Length: 179
Image (cartoon, rainbow, N blue to C red; front, side):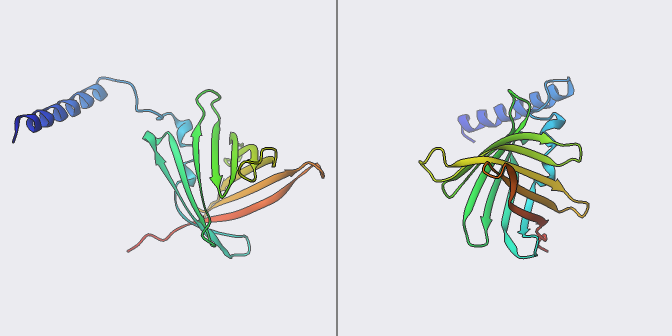
């Protein structure tokens, strides 16, 4: 082994030993290890998403990244339209926040768990890239169900009617694991 490569191996081994020793000596916990960062874990996974009438709406993949500090969502509807969101605890406010982008629309909202254990986020949806002011108040609710599924309900505020109206409801069912 050449000298540089050997030095790299020795340095890597020393770093691993130091990390193990630091953990044994009560060093700082891993980033985002506080329980608040696991409140949305019920949504993590590979999902098929269905409308309330049983028709397939699409598929969704939600994974943990950045040491468990970030949930990344990758959505694809039944027609092939995609979208992505970043979900994280805003360290300034202590609230969960989601920023969603899909086909020229954005959603930016925040909130947390309600008394029933559902994640409820509220903020705004913007329509039409490059057209400010084409948005509305928006709310998302993710409810874990006893059978392991998750119900996702989106509502948009109708200012003219002064009420919340259903925008989308999807039932998330875990994809079957390949044999």
